[in-house]
Length: 299
Image 1: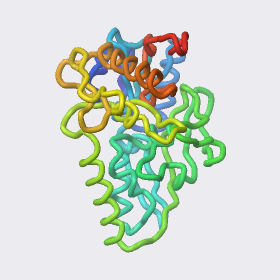
Image 2: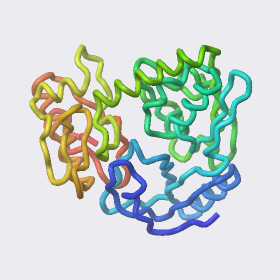
Image 3: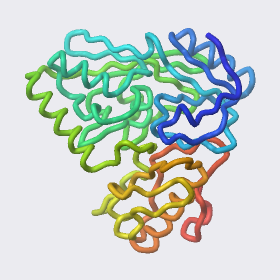
Image 4: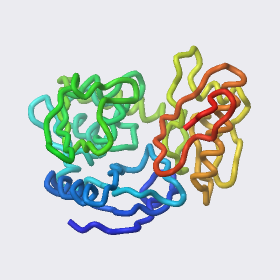
């Protein structure tokens, strides 16, 4: 396994911004992951699991970290009875498609999530009323000291979060699904894809949902929309006209542009609704949310 240095991460994130990482590795086995973690530990660097880069906003100046992509056997999907066993680098949509072809139900929601299994476990990704926690049985997690299987309880899956710590890499996951008619699964997948296409931006680069939905009668997108921020643009970044909880790269957007819009939306929503929106996107590098008086120490 080769570890490259100073690799620009903009081309590895779905939003398309971000400077270079100190190191960049493509791991194709559990042993590769262990070696990559050792390389980072020797240099006192954190490890950044990239996945498809669909939930990341990387500092424009880059990040002092080892960026890690899982490929090869760590991106494969196999089926054993009513279980799907997927590598941490496997696409969520691939898992959903394999399950559908095998007549297994439970992963239909994942067909519309543009991420990987590893990231999905770490943040308990979900859509349309379901999430990884509903079907995940256990995950193989590699750390700097050891590797071990963690069950759902040990993982501590919750709304867009888990107990996994920085430096722990999900290299494999097992999902327990249920038998169903292939035609019914196909209808469910098709409906969710159509719903996503009609309600969320497509054809433009985004990093997915900007904010978590708060404990409020309105979701984050509806609040931002009510603040008349749809279409608001700073630099090359724009709050989507289709769904206000998305920021689009209209061409040449920087992370600073996106952060400015995030700060604007948080401030306006707090002024109008008294709600402090919390980011769902992960901020990577020496960047933070723009502060405002309501929180005083944002970021």
